[in-house]
Image 1 (cartoon, protein in one colour):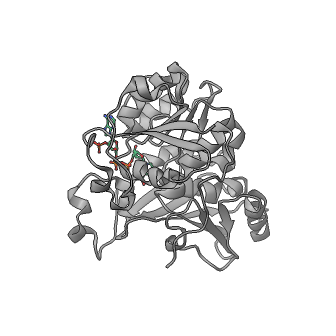
Image 2 (cartoon, helix red, strand yellow):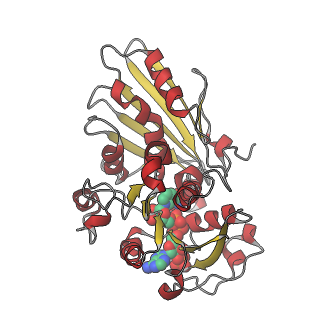
Length: 345
Ligand SMILES: NC(=O)c1ccc[n+]([C@@H]2O[C@H](COP(=O)([O-])OP(=O)(O)OC[C@H]3O[C@@H](n4cnc5c(N)ncnc54)[C@H](OP(=O)(O)O)[C@@H]3O)[C@@H](O)[C@H]2O)c1
């Protein structure tokens, strides 16, 4: 029998992308597509690609908590409240926001707010055992047994996939991440700096230093690499994210060690592909997919390794990874409804 799931925040970019992915899923029945201000709006009025869908539902907690699983695709403030309520009711939750990714202390530091449910803060060592950080390539077993999964941020996903396997080969304090995202990363709401006339033909950094994803990257990078420098950029494209991460190799580490670590981590993974050294991933190749392509080069002059990793911010960076986590949590084939192959050109 199909598992019945619902989305809260279906009228946003992440939620609507999940609606697209769930169309025709072999084991999941999308029973509720709830919106906030857009409840009762025809889905195709906001998302013309979803022409067959009806109208957005209202958020009805009594209906939602009867489902097998609820995906929260809302701002973190709404998820903080809803996540705890569903968890307490025994309904499984996968949350796309930052509400449950950090420790309670980390949440206070980076989001300026006391966490209302430290027991559900995935980054806390004392968090409930059925709470997981949803990066399957690094936390798969915990996700399988979870009741609440905190889906990673888009920048942390690309960065952690690139740096995670080689973290033990790097000097503490040497990591710098320079990342670029298309404008859908900022959500559907109209904002002045996201107008076509502002973004088209332009490139800019933002929120540096101290972008909130810095804390998430530091929390979930394996080992003791210490503070990282992270600078995000806005690029004139709808979707796609490229993270370029730099670190200095320890004295005894070699370029072969880097290549071996990446291949050991990913050669058996369905969604992460290591490209041959000297070829570099491009965002377009991942569009619409749950894939991540990455490659590493080592500069012998500086002992610095550069890892570039590309994802679709709405795919592996959001809805695709949500579906991967939903599949794992519900015991469905992990790859169901997903592909690592993007739309190209
Ligand atoms: N966009 C990305 O690439 C990306 C990647 C990773 C993670 N995320 C995270 O995923 C979440 C959703 O992002 P998004 O880009 O999809 O945002 P979005 O396009 O702005 O959509 C936000 C959604 O949340 C709903 N919502 C707002 N306030 C609500 C409330 N109080 N109660 C219930 N629903 C509420 C909105 O409903 P109405 O429109 O009906 O008002 C809308 O459906 C955010 O936390 C974001 O940080 C986004």
